[in-house]
Image (cartoon, rainbow, N blue to C red; front, side, top):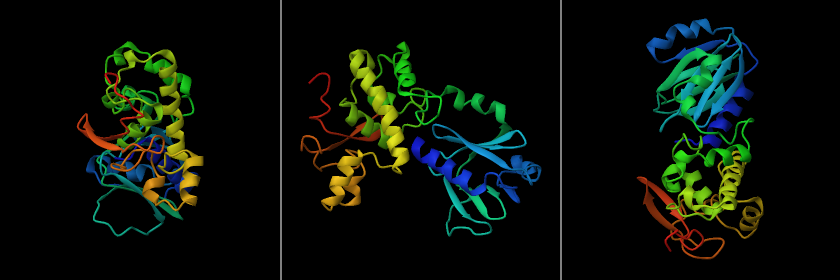
Length: 276
């Protein structure tokens, strides 16, 4: 499933491709939405609004198209009239004279007034999204202090979109590593400096992954590894998908474990369990 940085980049691509120009074709695959296709013809897109893993295309007429990729959804940007070779099903499309933004395989697509977008049932339950302009590391830090999160283990909590919006499996492993925390840690076990550090890592790593197209290594380490001829897999993440490879900080072997029914990667030396 695309995580927050990938959804925000998709919104950027959609904005560059089709925003600010009249829509010449609007396609909905679902019968319940078909009438909106004709209603939106000639309108213009205003912006792509993201909330964690959800994306809304806001139109000048005052409506928005809410989408969520779920596990298999995928956006494609093509020249108008051009379609990729794929077995995926086209579910939604907006096309101008020049470009087309096409959403494949997603099933969560709705039309609502743009003022209602933030109150959508999914969006209203989200925690702070680090990639939104109105969220800072301080915003996240205050959210982390809420009592309802205190006793939950971070390895599960980071996948809860009500905790922090947009964090998924690769971001979870990378956040825990960079913060030096084991998945078994609970917020109630962390002192104020470690809570602050966790908030800073969540915020900073989200922006780094967005800026670097899913890569989470810091710039200095990534540049050094590239000079040394490291392959792309080893220049992408600190621990995620690097099981049985060496930790960049302590040279211990990276482990893959199952946590909250999802694969998680860690360095047991750098991320010591609270009971160790």
